[in-house]
Image 1 (cartoon, rainbow, N blue to C red):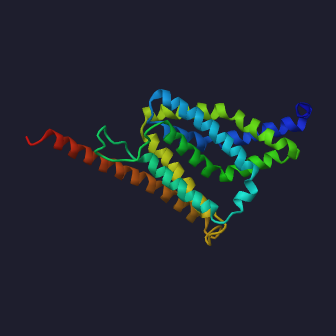
Image 2: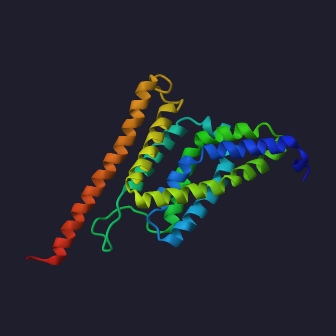
Amino acid sequence: MAQLADPLFWLALAQIAWVNLLLSGDNAVVIALASRRLPPVQRRRAVIGGTAAAVLLRVLLTLFAVRLLQLPYLKAVGGALLFWIALQLLRPEADDDGAAGTHAHEGLWPAVRTILLADVVMSLDNVLAVAAAAATAPPADRALLLALGLGLSMPFIIGGSQALLALMTRFPALVALGAALLGYLAAEMLLQDPALPWAGALPRGAELALQLGAAAVVVLVGRWWALRTARALRAAQRARAGPP
């Protein structure tokens, strides 16, 4: 309890909470995308459970942030994973008999799994900022600070996810926009991996073009999947109806 009387403890706590709040927008997008197809009750559980587990994982990642980010090709693998997640989140749902076989979320735990995987990938950079904020406190206090600071951001992530879910329900185009954001971030990670020859070698304009291109690819593939699924559903409906 001695920490509670230490002004530096509260200053570090405020810094961690603020930094994490600023960096939590991507997490809210992923949570909203991954849980949008669930029934309302499961959707709330996915948002709360996914957020809590993601915060816990971020605490653990932050404790080992420097060592993790020194691993070669880690960001490249993370970028590839995030790109795959963005594509999967745009895959359309099948109808009840599975005529348009897809890989949509089938329940609460698959959605939570996607939230956790995406959060781990996107946190690779974010944890450095949080770790820097925690470095101002004594080493013995850092784990407690990280848990409290990241925990304070949970209501904001949950609230942001719920607001995005409502908007995505009303404006379906935001689903593609959210997936495009993940594609953009995936390309950014691939371009920044220090183990790869192009890291830091490309002009900023070229990097931006590649990131926007990755976002466009995600949207185009999602659109192609949607059109293919619609055709398969129409063919299945005609087959069930039989000859005229």
